[in-house]
Amino acid sequence: MLLVLGTFLLLAGLVLTLIPFNLAGSSANGWAQDYIIAMLVLGIVCIIAFGLNEKFLAPVPFLQWEILKSRTVMGACALDVCYQVSYYCWLSYYTSFLQVNSGQSLQVAGYISSIFDVVSGVWLFVVGFAIKKTNRFRWILYWAVPLYMLGQGLMIYFRKPDQEVGYLIMCQIFLAFAGGAMIIVQQVAVLAASDHQNAAGSLAFLGVFGNIGGSVGGSVSGAIWQGTLPGALQRFLPEEALPDWESIYEDLDLQLSYPKGTETRLAIEKAYSLAQQHMVICGTAVMALSLIWMFVIKDIKLDRKQTKGVLF
Image (cartoon, helix red, strand yellow):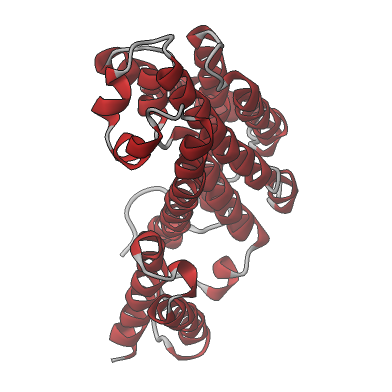
């Protein structure tokens, strides 16, 4: 019964915490809506109750309490949250921006937005080899976190209508090298702080925090977009296009129907740039917290003797 209770509390906590980030944008009063506040409060209470259940009641805990309170595990989880929030702040609506502001086709915009996944996926092998050779992992964060902030910070300047798309690709490559390194370091950190029996649970625990960060990032970027773009269109659009601002806001095809260089298209590009810059600024500010989390993580040496085989 206690095992079922812990599972229920964890699932209820995650569901009640994550759903509001998807509902807040469409609710009448946004985050002030009563059921949004209620779900967040109940979700946090359930997550706290899950931790107390693991500590005092569960005969076989999901994770050992020593692991749950480990500064390395919590530092890696906090780093993952900041990383995911920051990631979605620069990636959201990026393909639309490339089509509207840079004049790229949907196919080319898709290729450009996929640069991060391709480069970071290959780079993971290099970082993994470096960790194996040095038996250390925290040193990677010393350059990965600042490099990620640099790449995202440069996007604040380069997400403008008159900037070459090559500069955006350069920023994405910086982000890919740094992001790929952080992904593997987070996983190695929680595994290094856990014993063999709790390896899977530790990775799952890290994944929970990553999903929370992704939901927060998607919600924050969506809120910035919805709060910035409509007002910017109403300020920048010429008088003849101003009555259609709502249709322009909602329809990407209509935005692209205005030829490049026309007054209306330039106004749309300017509004896009303003919204995107606000999103990237927010992501860079959140990522700055990772400068703290990377020192919370202990620099555990990885050449300790490992348990071999399968334990039941």
